[in-house]
Length: 350
Image (cartoon, rainbow, N blue to C red; front, side):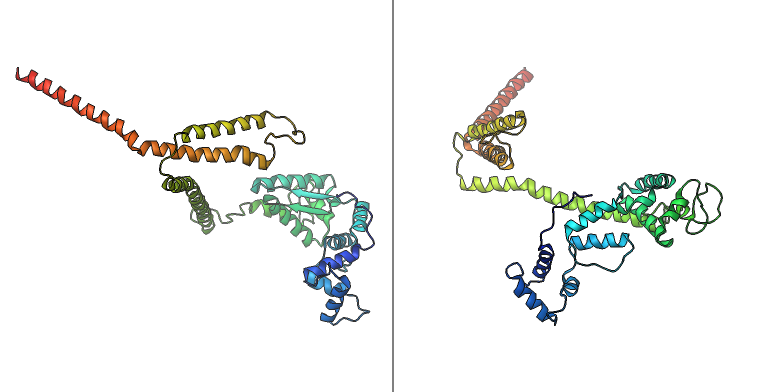
């Protein structure tokens, strides 16, 4: 339950009208009276007519009006939405002491667990005390089943509560009748019989099984294809950037590699400072703590260091100065091989 809102301003209802008129493009924030007159003219309303019903039909309801409609429904009044102040609605909700039941996800395991929760609440006669039901994923499976059962019994939560309790009635379509003691009601039996809601028709050669397999394979291949393509493009980006810079830069300077190493060590230094820092830094601190400081002091030096290091390593592998020692070494190896051949030939002749 949200905390009690502060006292409503006198123009809170007017603010709701302004929001609705603005959503329709009448510009009520600038001139409310003019916007309201234009709306009355477009809707053929007289000065004595209340513009709220027509405005609500076109622009929709705001939160305070929806919440008030829910509280009216809990009291048995289904007359429809009407203007409401949020502060008044909050106070009314607190007087009702509303409670909600939430079912988490987790597939059929979640549905099975939540069924046990429902049976325990029914045994303790607490299920009738909940006003709201919130579900997600597997919890929605059991939540939809419970909501349908309650609707079939005309909204009588106490009847469902009696049927779910271990010592309650279990017979009948709706769970009311003279079945055997402690036997499960028909809706629960139906739930257990059709627990394979993803593949209702089981079997290796059933259409449901192969539909599930094809759907899983399609989604997996599609996601992996997109992920692989994006990763390949991301990995090719540094190579493309290096090629562009290398094309424009004839020869990297002699200090390119040392500068790359220095930037890398600087980024590591700032990382160590940021990690070793405990608590929030004092005002005016220069240590990289927020996102902008991390981007400037750590990410940017690392990127520049990687670029300069790639350029330096590429130039050193393809430069003539680096190729000359390799050529000289290859020539010496060939000469040594020739000398060994001559020696072995002379020894063989003897």
